[in-house]
Length: 79
Image 1 (cartoon, one colour):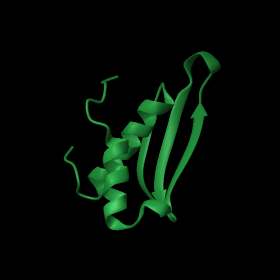
Image 2 (cartoon, rainbow, N blue to C red):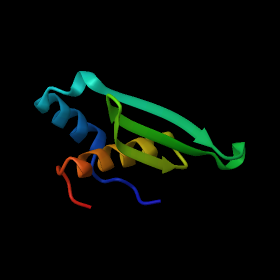
Image 3 (cartoon, helix red, strand yellow):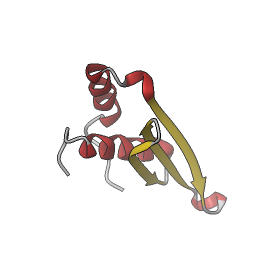
Image 4 (cartoon, helix red, strand yellow):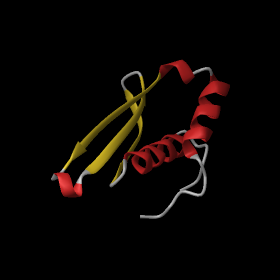
């Protein structure tokens, strides 16, 4: 699993502050798999629209992945 050198959560928060959408960001979390190999899932959405989702062995990495996908889907970062 690659480490994130950029804090996409901070970037996402700054972006949403600038667009006025910060109060509407909803994070949801769940996990799957056996206890010794749990995969965490983080979902970032505005209203009913999912803009980002991440799956990783840790919740914090899953959240970074979801934030990156959100920003990518909004055209704020590249692949």
